[in-house]
Length: 291
Image 1 (cartoon, one colour):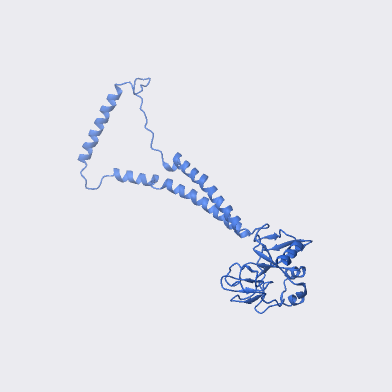
Image 2 (cartoon, one colour):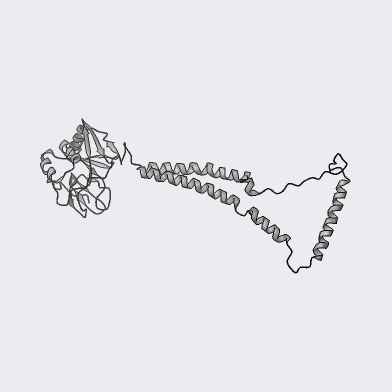
């Protein structure tokens, strides 16, 4: 799963870079560069060839006279500072600030900060949730190693008394009894050591899913078989196919027995069920079918 973790980290980093770059683009979109403003100013001040300059000169003269009148009017007041030599001190107007030199404005800074503060936790939470969903469960549930709530002795006693297999919902598995007298027949068909070890201990762990189209297969008490209610596939008490459209017997899981503890390993792929025609126990239907 290393590739999965690496992929999620790369997605989060790419999302963060995208948020920052997008905010920077929004902040600079519509602004003119310094060279563009200089070209516009030079083209606006240069007269077009063949243009009569007299009106422009008269306008400039009138503009100059009006500015001189305003200067004299201000000079007569008290707002213009006076130099020590008796002359007026010129008040310089600061040039406009270049946006490129200024960098990010206060509003742009806060917009980007809000996007990062809100976006990064959301993406991180999504990544962790996705990782938790895809990461296989190491223990305690389906997709991991499930320890049976009952020991081997109690499981076999309950199956014998109630005439039905023991169901473990955490493993989505039926634990059925396997007759010790039929172990020799089983070894001719079944080859997985963990499966054979469970049979020798007297049990087999059957995945509840029908191998036909995936319906959950319940136990039929009257026939003493597993019978699928969806399309009528039928399996004997140890999960070997006896009828219906199923292409093989029920899939099963490796079983590990330590002392009286039974552990069913659902962390990997299920062991494929036996082929059609397998009947190692010779069990027929013991009563009416449920399906």
